Image 1: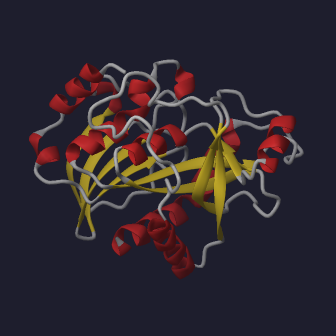
Image 2: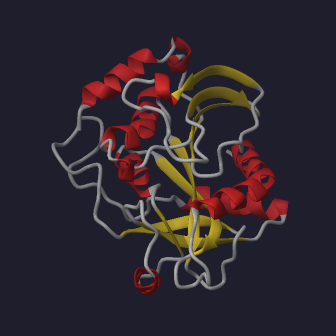
Length: 272
């Protein structure tokens, strides 16, 4: 891991980003890019301008760094994410977590769109992530131990902390949303999973599957942050869905759920 890349990105940020630690960092996944309500924007930077991050290359990821205030909280948001499958290495993938760590953030909310494996799920449902399965073993902690990233062998017993899961449940209940807790299976992408793979992941205990979130969650946990994960089920996974999978489904589901996403994040922020 080239830490000088993070040094350059942190130096690029305006001083207001380090005035005081934000109360929350949010990483917005596919379709979640317009789910924020803001009262006062303190800083706004396109990813393309940030050293080492680079423009988001996937539809549904606006690619913008935001520092803003809302409901009495100061929040840093990464509107869109970079993925391992883009081939740019780990630095842009975990940049949001490392920047948030340097800003003093203690709590992180990771969001994504996923394919439903659990037959009880349908498109438009929300899943509060309680655990994950790293199906490919890719891990940003592989390599020399980095100062500030915790011990050599960090415990991963409870990455997605129960207290924050409870906050998300309460928020969803207040809104009358269909929601369940589930396990997220991480694949490298960029291909969708085969029906046989989905079948296997289901037997491993996975409820949803996607191509993100786990690298950020692992690093955040290793650094001592409290992590929450929230997934929108955009479609049924391969072998469960009767039709071929497309990214258009993800975008359509995100667009339809946009008001509910905004309400759920709003309630979560207010309850922190």
